[in-house]
Each structure stands twice: as structure tokens, then as C-alpha cells.
Amino acid sequence: MVGSDPSDAHDIYDPAFVKGVFDRCSDRYIAFSWLCSFGFTERWRKQCVAALPLHAHEPASGYDLMAGTGEVWPHLLKRFPAVAAITAVDISAGMHRRALDRLHRHRAHKIRFVEDDVLESRLSPDSADFIISTFGLKTFNTGQHERLADLIAVTLRPGGAFSLIEASDPRGWWLRPLYLLHLKVVLPLFERFVLRGAQDFAMIGTYSTNFGDASGLTAMLRERGLEVRYTRYFFGCATGVSGTKAADE
Image (cartoon, rainbow, N blue to C red; front, side, top):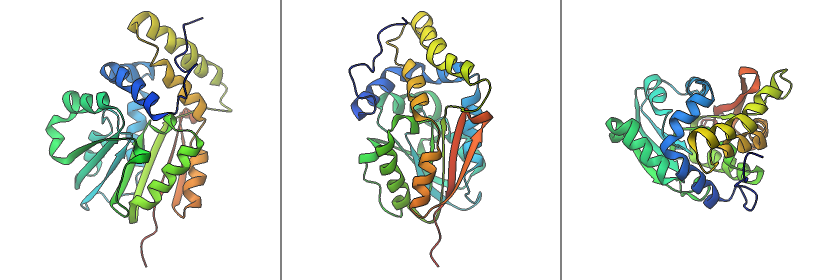
């Protein structure tokens, strides 16, 4: 047995539980996620930005939901240099602090932080030219995904665009057993014996396998009238959903 499972006595989708996990992970999150994904998380962030159907040279403002350490911002600002403002929403104070102190202080004039549960945040209707989210979807259950779909549909301006990506369960891939072994066994062992943590990083594997893939959220967004595209990355080890809100006629 690797150790006690921190989810045993808790609702792992409760916002307070999620906040605690990522506050404790924040100082080592960047290195851990890069090493333990063999660099794929960085590649997938770039692909998420590439899937965002936004015009490159039109001034735009929008939201990075479940923003974490803000690792998507360099890709976003490189592809869309006319972006005027990014409002980063995340429940974890530790992740916000890490984003500002380690990565993005020189971009601070374009980025505003909101420390809040995304689903409880008061984002104004029709206020976003774009919405992006990388690797935060897994921390929501199905009911919370319904609320997130509502939020995206309401918050986007007519003609606005969105792109979301999440690590996923690559069902049907012949190497899936090795992938799940990596998530469920190797990562907890690495944390226990190398990082000597409280097994918070092991929760990332639990969240990812519980999430499955982005097909459910894709259907929810489509039901709300958005134009939607579903994408599988690297045999389904990550899945994404992107699209637009219809422009006013």
C-alpha cells in the first residue's frame, strides 16, 4: 500500500478540498507536472491555444479559468499579441502566488488575479472575447461541469471563443494500462519517496481517471447553443473542447 488516500474521508470535488490540494502542491507544481507528464502538459497547453478560434490581431480581453500557475499565458500572448487583458480565476492562493512570483511578474500589467471558486465567481454576462482553461476541468464533477457550461455560455460575448483542455483516460489505446499504471502507481510512489509530500500530487491521477474525457462537457456546451469542436490529443491522453458563441445577427 502506497499510503493513506487523502480522498478517503472527503468529497474530492468540494471547493475547500480542491483548494487545499493545490495550495499544498503550488511550490512544486510546475516542475512536477512537467517531469511526470514527460513535457506533454506544455505541448498540450500550446495546442489548446492553437485551437482557440480567436483573431490574432484584434484587441481582446478574457478569462483563464482554473488558471493555476499561468503557464498558458506565454503561449496565449505569443499567438495573440493584441490581447489586452487576462483575468485569471483560481481558487488557490498558492497557485496565484506562484504564477506571479515565478513566471509572470513582467506581464502583470495585462493580468488580473481573482482568487475565487470559478463556479461562484461573479463574471459579468457577455464580458469575454475568449475563455481558456488548461488542466482544471478534472477538479469538477458532472454537476459542476453543467454549471461551468452555463458560465461559459453566459460570459462569452456574441462571437467570442473558448478552448479548454484536460488530461484524460485514453480508452481504446493499447498502451492505456501503462498510462494508468503511471498515474495510479508511479506518481504516488514518486511523491512518497522523492518529494516526501502529503500525497497531494497523487490526487492529480485520481482526478484525471475520474474525469474520463471532455466528451461530456462537449455535449453540455453544444446543448447551450455554442458551436463546439471536440479534439483528442496523443491517443486520447488529453482531450479538448473549443468553439465559439454565435455572433449577433
